[in-house]
Each structure stands twice: as structure tokens, then as C-alpha cells.
Amino acid sequence: MSISLKNIDFAKGPVDSLHHDYYLWRGKNIEDKRLFLVFSSRGAGPGEFSFFKTFDALNVNVLHVTPSDFSWYQKGLVGLGSDLPSAFKALSDRIDNFCIYHKIKQIICVGASMGGYGALIYGALSSRKIKTTLILFGTETILKLPYSKSSESEFDILKKFKDVRFLDYSDLDVNMIFGEFDIVDTYCALSMRHDRNFSFFSCTSASHVVPEYLNRQIGIVNFFTDFLSGGRSFIGRGHIASELYPEDISPLLFSKQFTEEYNNALLCCLKKYPSFGFAWNRLGVYLHNIGDLAGSLAALKRAFFINPDYPNTIEHLNSVRNKLKTKNF
Image (cartoon, rainbow, N blue to C red; front, side, top):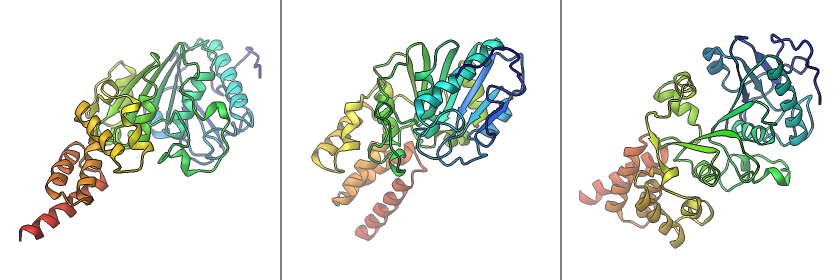
């Protein structure tokens, strides 16, 4: 879709004629040469937009995009196309023309979970006419993996967009932020280690909903302010992406729990990366199940030290302690 470069009104934004239940433009400062493009997560319905309060507080130029359903953008975008590639191409054309007209120098795409997937695909399909940065939270690079959020919904996936690890991300600045207690998000992030356009920022004690974790730790607005200024250190940052590879943790995702292959993978991961709280939790649960209460207690304490809010660790830790009290009594 080609948009004329004549008289593109800044106040109306890149999508002025489209349905406002699915697009929300907030142009705060015409002198700010950045445009934020925020893709909504699963759960945001018509008239609802992820990170609304966050970006209102940041006081930046932002376009929020919400799909019509929870099909991970496979059915396109309202008013732009009924399939993912055509809709994202149309959106990219509109945004490129808007940015060129208003001399905007950078597009910053943001999304979490399903929204992170949308932001990632937008980047891959974008023209690169404008410098583009992606900030992705808990993003699946392969849809429908075991235990994944995308597997919880029924929808058809275009073959090209089920496994997006090898799409073209050249000339993009891609930042993946994920919780080490979510094995799917961790695997998907580690699966991008081959691409030099990607940077990785893990949270040792976070699960899937990383923005909520960061909001509790430092405030999500503070996180964005610092990150956009070049800050890359934050409370609880892990280093799993520099210690483990996807093949190290793949048995934790694809093998049956507590088989020999699964347990060997746990021990291998912990040897290479002792701060892997999820692996300590799984080891503690396994030892609990086979009756090694002392070993289980030690492993669960390590998991609890890393993430004191993980419900499964708390449940098993309390159970093991009660059994040890009864045994000793």
C-alpha cells in the first residue's frame, strides 16, 4: 500500500484512517525523532493496548497495535491485510512514509510474549529505510513448542512464520529480554545465539512475564528510561546466554521429565551455569520424588535463593521440610 508523502499530519499519526479499537497513536513531541511501535500481547482485546501506562509515562511518540484475535498475528491486522505478511508490509509502508515525512530517525519496536513475536516479525519484514531497534520480552522464536504460550491457543500458522529463527534480521538491533525460569523463552532466546544482530538479557528469577518482574524490581518506566539511554545492567540480570546453548537445555523441553536424558541435562546445565534456578528446582523436585529428602532440600534451597517467589519451589520446599521434621521426630 503506497501512501502519499504530501501532508502527513503528525497529530493523526501513521494510521489515522484505521479503526481506533486496534490502533492508538499518541504523538507527544514532534521534535523527538523516535517512533515507538508497541505490539499488544495475548489478552489485549479491542480498545486495549499493552504497555499503555508505561509509554504514557515515558512521554514519547508511540503507535500501539492490537490484533483482532489471539492468533499471534497470523490473521493479519484490521484494515491492513488478512494475513501476516501483507498486513505487516502495509503497516511498514505507512510507518516508513510517516517517518520520512517527519524526519524521524529511529523506530523502536516493543512487545512481550505474543507482542514480542509481532515486533520480531515486523523487524524481519521491514524495509530498513529507518534505523530499527527491537526490545522483546519473553518472545517465542518457534511457535507451538511444548509448554509454550502459543500452544494454548488454536490457530493456523503460515509455515514460514512458525520457526522464525532464520528470517533476515540484518541491520536490526534486536534485544531479547527473558526469564530463566521460563524454559520455552530461554530455549527460544538461546536459539538465536547464531545471529550477531541479537543481544540477550536474562533475569535469573523471572518467569514468562518479565515486564511485571522488572516493574517490581526497579519500575518498568525506569527500566525503559535506563535501557534507552544505553544502560544494560539491572538487578537480577543473569548470564545464561553466554554459558549455555540451546542443545544444552533442549532435553528439558523435549524429553519426558526425570528420564535419564532429562536428568543428565539438568546436571550438565548446573555444571556450566550454577545460577540456573529452574534447573535447581527440577533437580530438587526429582530428588523429592525418589525420596532423597536431604538432596532435595539442598537443591530446593538453591532454587529458592535464586527465586524466592516461584510457587513450585515453595510447595516442594515446605513439603520436604515437613517430611524431614516428621522423620526426625
